[in-house]
Length: 108
Image 1 (cartoon, rainbow, N blue to C red):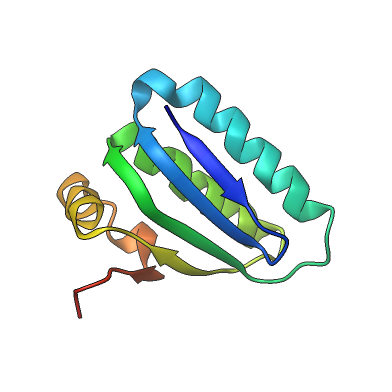
Image 2: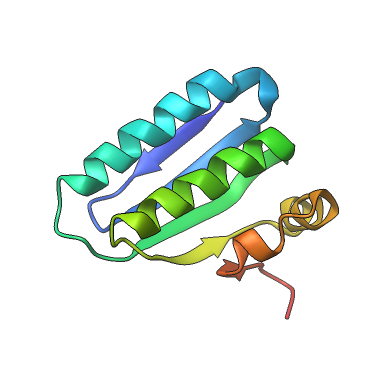
């Protein structure tokens, strides 16, 4: 089950499994979050993805699209925290460049 929390300070924390099987629900969730951010003054958003336990190529694509939609609307994703396991999955899937604002705890 995918969970999300959204704080008033533009911090978005995502949890759960981000895979093809949940793509429709995840896309709706990200669209809702984008709409909420657009109701505010544009300010940088902090993405905490460290609670994501599993991520496949479809999940990566959804997150990359979300970050690009933020940028297009003048909202910079200033941090994108990933767990070491998910950062390894991102690298294996070839999405490392897309997650260039990444902070991985325990890695330099």
